[in-house]
Amino acid sequence: MANSSWMYSCHEASRMISDALERHLAPTEWMRLRMHLALCKMCRDYEQNIHVLESTLNSLGNQGTQDDQLSDDEKTLIRSNLNSILRDADDAL
Image (tube, rainbow, N blue to C red; front, top):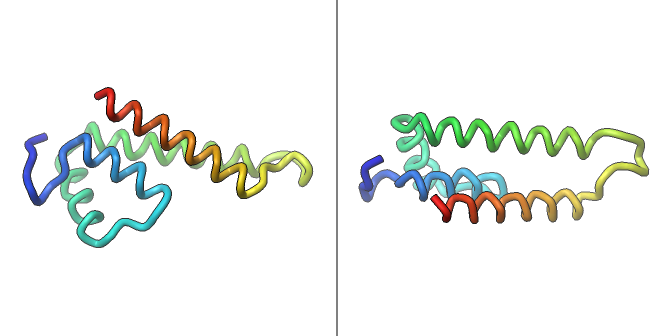
């Protein structure tokens, strides 16, 4: 993807996709990400994979008996660690 001041690069887009799991994006961030995703199939696929991973983790956290479930703090820690791993992988690209 070409780097433009009004649209994210693939590296920036992947970081924004990960950030969006933890916080609401500002309107300008959201718009720049949507513009990038409209033109970049690779990043659209990445976003879809991230959402599948998040859904899978959420469903795993909701299985079992009440005693077997992860606490909200444990879920947040796991999600944060996974996002850190994903960021490190993005940096390696």
